[in-house]
Length: 204
Length: 200
Image 1 (cartoon, helix red, strand yellow):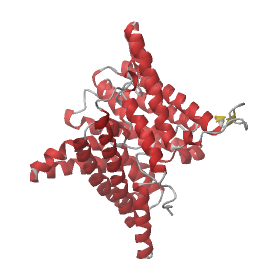
Image 2 (tube, chains in turn purple, green; image 1 turned 180 degrees about the vertical axis):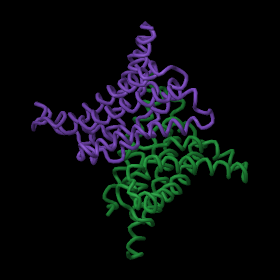
Image 3 (cartoon, chains in turn brown, green; image 1 turned 135 degrees about the horizontal axis):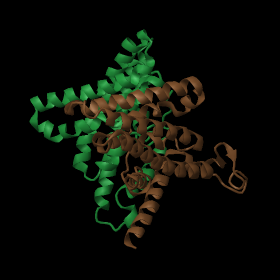
Image 4 (cartoon, chains in turn yellow, red; image 1 turned 90 degrees about the vertical axis):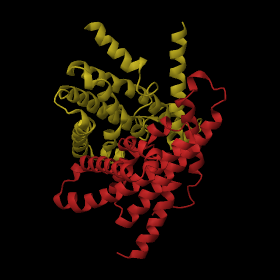
């Protein structure tokens, strides 16, 4: 049991990382990585949605008819996303406005559907929850790396606070980093770096 | 509401949705199929056409559903579920019709239809339409423009990737990595259109 759990954790965080191994679900979240704070909120929403919906799909796996499985999964995911959306609107309206449609777009985030299909569907709720949780964490840590680079290089701040060297006059701000192309470049570079580390390790 | 003003606004939204506000390169929507299905021009072409068709139709359907069903009932928060159900139902319906009446078209286009249900660009277009409060005519321009913009981007990417197929690329950068870097350069090029048109 314990080794099984460790395997799930390692796979989600590193070996089968959603972002740089599976390249899934980056759509709705790249747009919010220009500020670290937005990314943190978005990732928290994703961790909640992914782990809960994976567990729910797993609980319902025996009573769900095969042919409408996808639809049921989508509705389960939508249910959790609506909870997040309503909570954000009620308690943190500014953040809700910042994130715009991207909270709703968690529904079509392919990583959630992917994990529900690949794991939640054929495993008991406990492991499914763990798998969802650690996949979401693996996803979050890569996005946080991207967001930190983008905000520090592009705006000279980190979570809205000034960073000593980068916000001073000595640093010419890389505006391109907070614009859309910067997100693509950063994700490309991050994918490159992590995959190279993995293949180095594989060779040794 | 003046119909002429609406029409000219729709035209502006249409052009800016293709170039300056490209749904893929500026809003990152529909990235997964963009990376997964852009190895060959032929398949990219089929998928792109399917996206244009589905995006235009579903954003109109969703507009109608939002303004005539959800708004009178005050069920705004219910839009996620309603939109995704409408999209899934529409895609399923189209697939059946195409399969029944045109096997050739089904061969070229139909296989991409199921993929589209989970394409975030489709849902994204509908959500943007609600957030920006577009009218019906403007929504036509927006849906069509976004679809064409996505189509252009994936065709361009497939063309570049076909040329890249025989090049020597560092191992970690192969596949997704190089595609993302190229997408970044493409996005940079598309930001060059900013200022040609300002969406009002």
